[in-house]
Image (cartoon, rainbow over all chains, first blue to last red; front, side, top):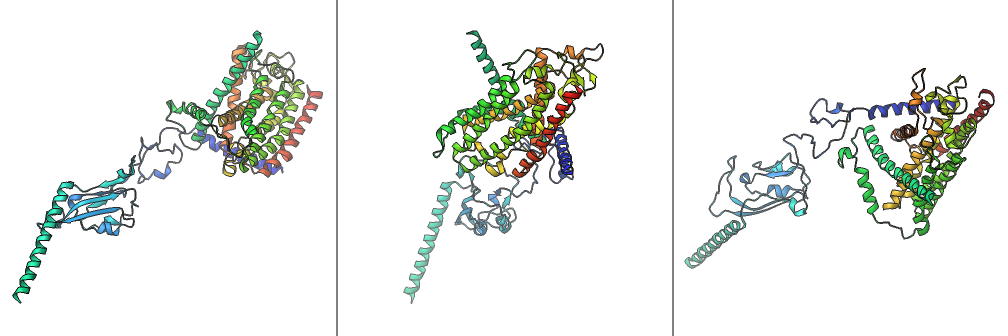
Length: 196
Length: 356
């Protein structure tokens, strides 16, 4: 019993000395060093708290956080929307009536207008599949991770740079062209039948 | 009529002190726990977070008092008041300085121990009145623990009382310094009546009182339901124990009672073992340090410093040692502390007869 009591007292004392040492170590603000630093895991002795909005751990420039779309490079192929496991990408394309409307920075031809290119960040699960399938690498993950909004709809990022009236105009043109084609087709068919 | 006004002023002053101590105590506890765990604690409200507890109490006081539908309303509403008043009344008999004591009663120590054991009743009322499994379990544990630990604590105190031959706390305080009318012997050998200081404290007048002090300190941790003896409110098992159902001002009262209890038991320990309001600095030859640092103001300063020191040790222990299991708790109380306390009492008797 005495051995037990002595053991209890000595171990309690050992614990108490440990905590008192920590009580009087530096209580200065944590020094912010990136996780790539060799000393990152050696910071055991001082303050551990990162006072977040005031102090931020540096993240790599190639961080895989929120999505960003360079709409000028987009050929509106819809691959990203198709592969997205949670269907957070919503794309509406309008076919151009005059063929190519320009080139992306890697030389692909753009044949479609992106009337709507919405990514719902509230749904996104940050898997990054869309960035892999993108043929022109226009959809990328950025190092931006801190976004707080008051309305859920503010998390729906709209990347399309087309004005609604422009989109309506293009839609009208396309319909007109299709109607013309249809008419031409019908006329050709008719001519064929008459010629028989 | 005038003395009634004095009574009210003293009572209000003690209440204000208890309130301020609780605010400062909670802040200190949060900071100490944070620093021990390499965190920063409250930093945002006020400079270094000093206004944090003030903001907390403002929030608590504005909250609604929710009485559970199945609760025993009378017991539930009365309980926090009884818990707090039991502890608060204990402050009436504590001496602060030579000649400065709210109520100089000749059975002061007995009165304090009688009145703070009413807290158990309040805790049982709270647990039973809440009509909640966790609350009643916490209350039962608390009652079992407090009643068990009153035995070693009581016998450790009796060991001092046998040396001091009085239950009057002011007299016990007087006997431990240069104002003593009796002869003081350091370790029962050297006469230090005129030197005073740390040499005249009870734990150095009779060395076995050091063991009695340790016993009392451990038991006082248990009586104020502090870790490592916090099984009545064990967060990981019982949500919050007996005060699970309390909200707003009622919860504030329970908290006030817990922190006042910490201060009260520490102050009783200081008065009985660590020289009460006497200075730790002895007279050395012509340097009359003890004489210079004795007086009403000095008394208040010394007793506050010593008591706050003990409170700090309580916090330090809380953030170091893990909680005891209930059987280990009873084991420690009945098989270790109680026999040791009896031995201390026996030695006190022998000491009184043959050494003093």
